[in-house]
Amino acid sequence: MRDLRAGAFSDSLPHDFPCRVVNILLGKDDSPQGWDADGRPRGGFRVRLERSHFQARRVGSPLLWQCVVPGLLLVAVIGSFAVSCVRKPAERHRVTTSNYVVLDDRSGTDAGEFNNRGTLKMTQGDVRGAMEDFKEAIRRDPDEPGYYENLGWAQAETGDSSGAQDTLQQAIRLSPNDSELYWKRGVVKGLRQNFRGAIADHTQALALNPKLAKAYGDRGWAKAMLHDWRGAIADSSEAITLDPANPSAYRNRGFARSQIGDFTGALADYTEALNQRPNDPDLFLMRAEARAQSSDDRGALEDLDKVIAINSDSARAYHLRAEVRRKSGDELGSKQDLDLATRLDGRAREP
Image 1 (cartoon, helix red, strand yellow):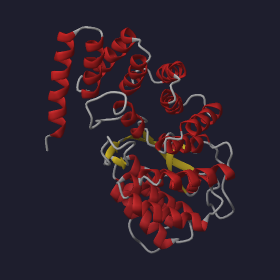
Image 2 (spheres, one colour):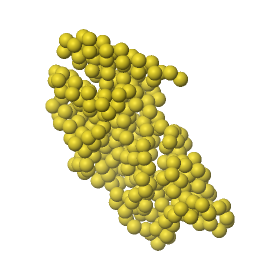
Image 3 (cartoon, helix red, strand yellow):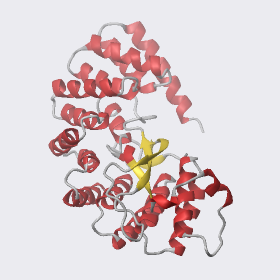
Image 4 (cartoon, helix red, strand yellow):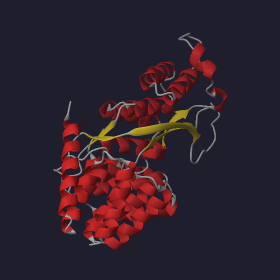
C-alpha cells in the first residue's frame, strides 16, 4: 500500500514525511446504530484502516530534541486514524469471496454489491480496484453518502488527499449530521497541512458526538502541529478519558508535555503508551529523548539500546545515542554511533 503523506511539524522536517497504513481489518463500527427502513447504515459495518501512530520512518535531521521527536509525532498524524473505516450499506449485502469473483457490471446489480466488493478489495490491498467499485456504486445510487465516504477514504489512502476532501464533502452534503464524516474530512485536512481546517472539522464532529474519542485525539494532534501545547494536552486528556486503551493519545500528550518542560508527565505518558504497545521502537526513542532532556542519561541509553535491538537501521537512535554517550564521556562509543548514523543517513538518501 502507498504511504500517506503529511506536512512538516517544523521547518527542520521534510514536507513529505511518510505515514504508513499498516493493516486493514474487517470490523464493526464502534457505535453501531442499526439500519434505516431503506437498508442504509445508521452506524454500519466498516473496514478499519489501522495505521501506526508515530511510526516514523525517517527524520531529515541528525540532531536531537528539536528534530527527532517532532518527526515521530508527525507520523502519528492522526491520533485515531487507526480506526478509520469503510462503510457497508446493509447486512443483506455481506461481502463473500463469491461476490468478488462473479460480480459484473450488469444493469440489475445492486449498488450495495459494488460497495461490498470494493470493501473486500480494500481488505485485500486492491485500493484502486476498490475505488472503481465505489465509483460504480455511486453511479448506481448517487444519493448514498456511505459510498462517497468509502471512495474518499480510499482516495486518501492512495495519497489523493485533495480528491478525498472533495469526495467527503459530497458525503457531508448528503448526510450533514454524521460525526464520522466530519472527523474523516478533518483527518484529510490534517494530511493536507490545513490544521485549522482540521480543528474546525473535529470540533464539528464533537458537537455532533461529544464521546467521539478519536476526534479529540486528532484535534489534539492538529493543535500540536500549531504549537498549541496546552490545547493538545487538554484534547489528548479527553481522548484518554473516553478511551484509556489508546497509546497514541498518551504519546501525543507526552510529547506536548515535554514541549512545556513537563518531563515527569511526559515520561509517565510514554511509559503508559509502552505498557500498551511494548515493542514500539519510536515510543522508546521518544522516551529516551525525554530522559536525556531530564538528565537521565542511563535511562536514555537503556531505551536507545532497545530501539536499536528492534530496529538496527534507526539512524535517529544512533544520532541520539552518540550525543548521550558524548555527554557521558564515552567519546569512542559516541564516534562509532555517529559513524553508523551517518552511514544510515547516506543510505536513506540514495535513490
